[in-house]
Image (cartoon, each protein chain N blue to C red):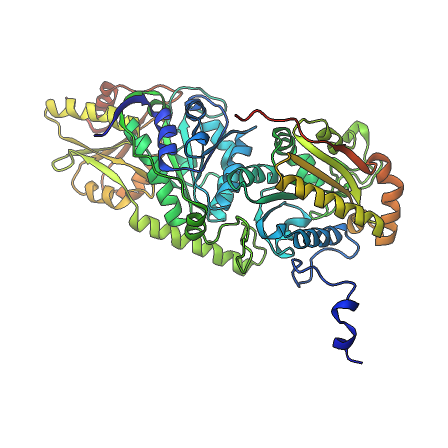
Amino acid sequence: MTKEEIIRPENKVYSRPALLTDVHTHYCPGCSHGVVHKLIAEILGETGLGDKAIGIAPVGCAVFAYNYIDIDWIEAAHGRAPALATAASRLNPEALVFTYQGDGDLSAIGTAETIHACNRGENIAIIFINNAIYGMTGGQMAPTTLLGMKTATTPYGRRVDLNGYPLAITDLLAQLDGTCYVTRQAVHTPAAARKTKAAIKKAFENAAAKRGTSVVEIVSTCNSGWKMTPAQSNDWMAEHMFARYPLGDLKNVEPQQTTDK
Amino acid sequence: MEEVKLMKGNEAIAHAAIRYGADGYFGYPITPQSEVLETLAELMPWETTGMTVLQAESEVAAINMVYGGAATGKAVMTSSSSPGVSLKQEGISYLAASELPALIVNVMRGGPGLGTIQPSQSDYFQATKGGGHGDYHLIVLAPATVQEMADFVGLGFDLAFKYRTPAMILADGIVGQMMEKVVLPPQRARRTEEEVRQQCPWAACGRRGRDHRNVVTSLELDSAKMEENNLRFQRTYAEITANEVRYQEYFTEDAEYLIVAFGSVARICLKAIEDARAAGVKIGMLRPITLWPFPTTEIARLAKQVKGVLTVELNAGQMIEDVRLAVEGAVPVHHFGRMGGIVPNPNEVLAALEEKFSIKF
């Protein structure tokens, strides 16, 4: 039996999403980015939204997202993705605009842009990877770093007196009138990944339907930065991260009607 | 028949932007340029031309909105004044690096720091030498009249799109705030989506059947490729320098001394020149309209016929460095300037000429 005879359409149970480019990613083995990229590529392909999508890439590990998902991309300065998305969305009302940001990008240097884009109810989706660390620059403390967590800039373990508290920025975004859908998910198990896929799909559909801002936080691992194996990272995340960043929907409503006339 | 209106320079910018068919304006209030955003809000162009107008949460956000809009091929702009333009430098560097057309207006006030809300020209270095990080230039236009405030919106956009590089209108607070007669350009329609895609095949505006993805980025980790990018930028700057130098000469045919001044200061100097000529001293003036590219060749030519050159600026002596590079020591080059928001009168310019060149009026 040849390969072609075995892999007939009716036997095919899995293939690389058409919008996921056929290249090696620069992500570390076990990193959540790869899974989330695949989910986004699947959704954009399955819904047909990829053809009108504009992705805004961050500064951080996902800076090269534009190499992996085969849609139009704009690479933002650190933290500014929601500002770019605001203009891209308002000036291209037919497009689906989404940002892909890490915790340093979204909840430290880009806090103002994040809050105000959400508060204006920009018709965009924000995909927020929270791995509690700056991965790309070598594992420094992020606003979301847990207390006691050792990083390159908190080798003693994060302390309240020196570094303040972990920032659950998604909780804050859920309070804003401009957000219509705010959820916190993970991709550490197949079941969790399926839920995340449904959440991202909903966020994209909200943006395309001009329902306001959707935020999908994905509590993630950074096994390199955390200095653990991928399996250890998943266990550690479930044990420690979910306590501070519990999974589930924080908000799921139609936004208040705006008075634009 | 053309319609003559009376308005502030800042208001002229807003009107001209709508009439050019600009797609978007993103700004943040700061004196002395807030009338740009206020006028746009009052005119509500989103109901007529479809132009987007948005008050951003900061100058940083505003310039990054410009970046996002420009990356989709749209004609977008922002305006601010000196402290706000400092905040925009990050975004301006990214615009230059990603080869994006955009228009930035700086209605200068006195610095450094929070400084003063009174007029200044002390951002000359920032505007013409880069301002943000990396090797780049902006096309810098210096209006001296409300009419030029209106005219340079279209010129700035046209040059920005022609060369795929951001352009700046570097106005001083006087030109922004003073009212003058102005003839506004005719209303143009905004480009259609199809026209945008045709004019900007590089734009990341959604593939819509395009056989490849467009990526707008300033990042390149391969040093050899990044050097090639820089060489391409420099070739663009060389082309702009060769083709786009703009200036105006006044009484230079028989001039024995030359004043170089830009913006509203050039008009003060023109009055001084008339007074000097009435007293029998032949002064001429060159007013750079493009501060970058700078009229180096033209100043070098005039330096051969005059005994000395005086730059008059609302700063401690910034443009004088470019004038000295042009003159190359052929004749003495001096500077006269006021700072802190003080604007000299023509008599002070005459006094400076007397003092620097030992002339008697």
